[in-house]
Image (tube, rainbow, N blue to C red; front, top):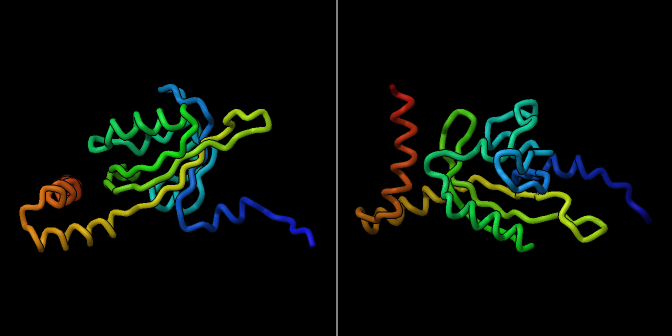
Length: 159
């Protein structure tokens, strides 16, 4: 029995955000966004029309970890799967803690033809973990920094 499979239907119904880009890693041109699934659009607040010609850098902001982004590029160039977590920003400027994997899809000649990122907003689960940590130690520096990022956005919204 042979199945006819529509991969787009599968991608659109995944709960994890999926972003596909070209393989041009040099800024400012690349990498360009080719596809974002519905979960990614919901997570970030963007719509597909707004992504035309854009790079994933649209999610970056003041608390995005630049060292981690350098490691992302190094891993992709070295043909390694990247895994990391950093602050990114929704279209409305709201910060969210994103955990993601990124890896190449290779063509017939063994060269990368796309980069795929599987991305997940882990802000809520991290907030729960750090509230517990702060309960044990009210001076926990990791918890203080995490909640400071969220509070910055809330304060800007009140002005």
